Image (cartoon, rainbow, N blue to C red):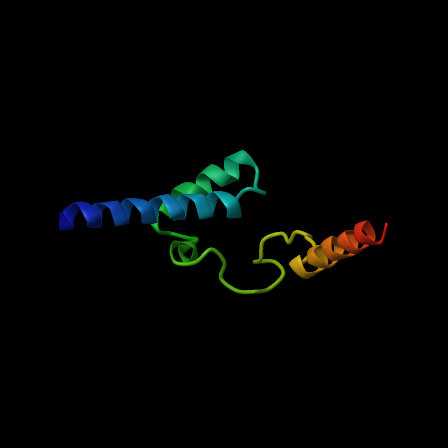
Amino acid sequence: MKESKRALRRYQKEVKFKKRLKVWLSNWNNFDRRIEEQKAIKGEGWTFLKTTSRPCNCWMCTYEKYERTTKSKINKQIQDDIQDDLAT
């Protein structure tokens, strides 16, 4: 039982590393990306992706942000709609 759990954790760690690497190298052309993936799997580079998805909080290392309305604004709109319906 213990050995299979350890093997599963190792497998999951490798899968996560490959996914993070794919996201980070997505802007490169195919030739360079394949070379860098091979180097990273050997442990020659991109080792910070083994433990975290980004090394710091700077604008270059963070993923693209997305806009969404906050829940408080949504709730306010719903309350306003209900008040309008009750008033009519």
